[in-house]
Amino acid sequence: MNFMASKQPENSLLGPESDSQRTLYPYVTGTSVVALKYKDGILMAADMGGSYGSTLRYKSVERMKPIGKHSLLGASGEISDFQEILRYLDELILYDNMWDDGNSLGPKEVHNYLTRVMYNRRNKFNPLWNSLVLGGVKNGQKYLGTVSMIGVNFEDNHVATGFGNHLARPILRQEWHENLSFEDGVRLLEKCMRVLLYRDRSAVNKLQIAKITEDGVTISQPYSLKTYWEFSAFENPAQGAIGSW
Image (cartoon, rainbow, N blue to C red; front, side):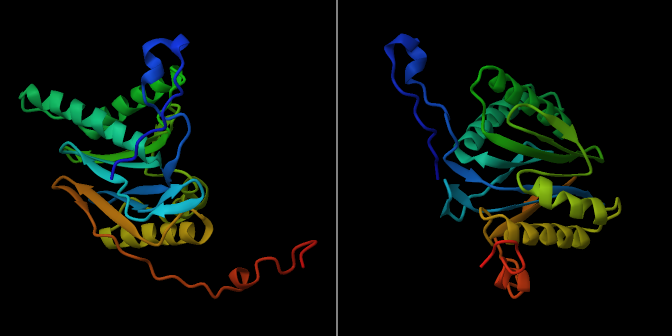
């Protein structure tokens, strides 16, 4: 599935760049990515929805990809721009492998590269419309960071993009701890994704969870969460509201 960016209007006054294709406004977008450190590595979760405006047009969009030997990337935002970032990273990893010096790029180096790319494009007023999560393990060291479409970046024990930054991170702050087992980490991510499904109109109940350890990346098959929609607030959300019917 290839999502083409919107085409810049032609104007002879703009020179050769007038025929280039770039994203002027995000069209097909993905919603939140949530990730955390656990005892053995990094866990990351994302649903598979692709929204065309406010319409959930695509429901099988994979938004988590392994990068090299040590890293895992997840993305929110414009899908075509995410595909462009993956092309950049393919070139970066290929160039690194060509040195054949026994070393390979770790997650910290890939994250630094992404922050430079995003900030560079922002300075050209031609941003890549994504928020990215980059996690990985190298030499026993766990790494987890995020970068926004304008280059704002940080590292933390747990990160989230989009609505997840508002709705999931309070849960993570309360329940995350350093010695989370794989099973507890998955349960915590599923709890966050369930809250996002209830509250984020762009979320779909079809998700993947990925893990990365020293042994490499494993991305689960898509599956659905068990949900409960009989809460009174769901049945009558306007009850008790001022001016409601």
